[in-house]
Length: 383
View 1: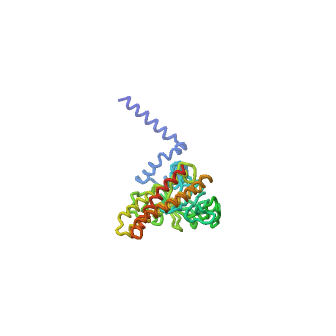
View 2 (view 1 turned 90 degrees about the vertical axis):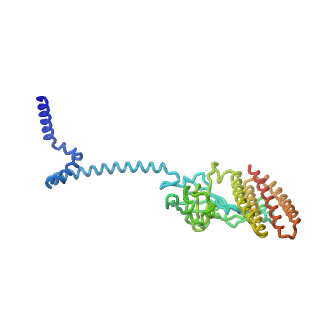
View 3 (view 1 turned 45 degrees about the vertical axis):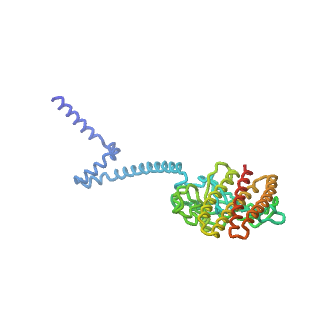
């Protein structure tokens, strides 16, 4: 018992000595006891004078704390900003043109012989190519047909975020290697230099990111990229980057190519054209099977023929623009012979029901089959 009393006395003495000796040094730790002091003053009615005496010290102390917190917050924000920038990958405020590296934008009706393609670099500059072919449009000096052609460059700027999956940008420049409407004959093909169809005429463009809801996109854009009829679409989100010319209402889809070229190898591009034609052919064949009258059947078969004829022209234009002169010359002679043979076979097939309402169907069916086969034969030249 005596030991306990003695220890208590020692502790009491040490506490008193410690409390009496704090002086100015105790003010440095005021921030630790400050919340408790304020609570006691409020709840127990501490004199106002006591609060006034310490106001200067508390203000200085609070200012120090504020500066410390501000420094800590700034550091945290900088760290967070760096993390956000590092994580940006196509979606978010840190999206930039560099995310489009390797992607090639493509504009076409899906059933025509024309197309426009372009690739965008990390600084917003782009290069592109437009082409349309009509191998049946011949004349003196150009028995190989007519090629509408344009190589162009330009620059987008002022990339502005609209929402999580939409950015807006301005077309700053558009230049052509050859000015539109100029013509010249090269290797018996008439080149008619044209504009950048799909790009020219626009000023503001939307860039849609992968993940954008298909149903939320403008109908004018969707009709160009295969999403016109939402009821027939299984995809709910874009799987590619989309480019939309707002003023001209022209829509580009895109593909990611591994090869470092405008749109992959020649064989890849031709394979993509054939793939699109095959999908279109399936739709048209289904439509033909549902035709109720002879007239409807004739029209449906004519559409099938046009699909493959347009594809043939597209593939032909691609080959003529990239094959060496000797190969291209040999191919043109072969093509002229094929056209003559095809026309003869079609005419022979039509003779069986000459003058009948079914004749157009028979001739179109034969022409479509021969043209389809020719497309696959031409594709071999790209390998």
